[in-house]
Image (cartoon, rainbow, N blue to C red; front, side, top):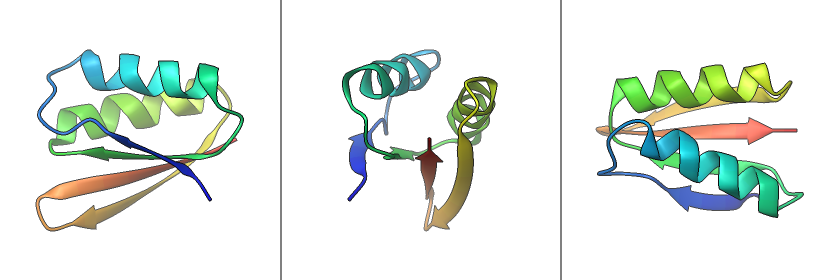
Length: 69
């Protein structure tokens, strides 16, 4: 089961920092919840630069970013 990270309400670069810390402290895949397109795009770009695969699911006004190692 992936680790869940709620980064809603945070302005950049905080969502990326929270995602980075979660990746450093866990060997699991992540599901990051964000509420804006800028955070979504930055986290996807960050994860891909680390060699992770990503998948984005839109849920209402939020985005779930699945980060797979």
